[in-house]
Image (cartoon, rainbow, N blue to C red):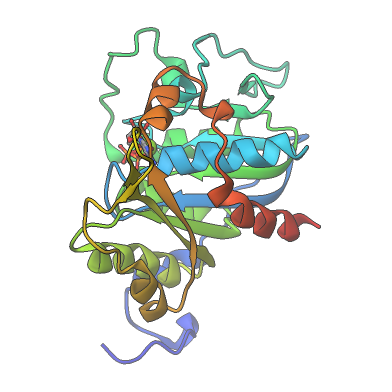
Length: 277
Ligand SMILES: Nc1ncnc2c1ncn2[C@@H]1O[C@H](COP(=O)(O)OP(=O)(O)OP(=O)(O)O)[C@@H](O)[C@H]1O
Ligand SMILES: [Mg+2]
């Protein structure tokens, strides 16, 4: 294929970025969001939901108004990690869904809130999933927010594509973990965002090392990380390197993610604050 000139009007290639010109969705009446931040990864289980929850909590604790849209329709995990167990999503008089609030007041919406039983699977095909995702953006009474985080399912499939095409995302945070193939996996996510003309804030490397609960020694179980080189190669930056700690996963499991104190994300949080100042 010839080199992209970024002028879709004169180009005959049928690439995904062409569809960027699809009109973006509008928020429901009364909702206003200053910045929308997507959190994405090329591969599952690297800690997208964990990182989303920590950054959202950090901003909420600083006094910003924050929401999380759990776009992982088939594998929703946000409500549970915040201990939001009440499933009764009510509607406003205008028929908009009222998001649930966490203990510190983060507004969340998730397909998990629509299921009476947590172990019930959502058996939806792509089009229905994308439709629900769009409803979670448009038909929710988000009110006035400084930040809306979109916790995406892994990979570069239907939902990330619909999200990038239809929601006016301001920045994307890529989450990765230090394993082999990381370069290829991270580059894929970055290339997808690039093709869709979405700005990347940077990469958070999660599970960068393990901290021994007995002696506090750092153990690089996946070997030496090469995330700095990967970031360089992709013209982006490493925002943070987060340790893997037994107490973190315990707190997530107990629905206490808001109580995790993690200074490694302070500079990322400051960077986001500067976007709304
Ligand atoms: N730094 C960490 N220390 C300890 N446990 C962690 C850490 N990061 C994530 N975990 C745990 O690892 C598991 C996977 O994390 P998480 O659900 O955030 O990943 P994900 O990328 O959102 O996964 P999926 O692709 O399935 O959505 C969770 O149980 C989470 O609590
Ligand atoms: Mg997740």
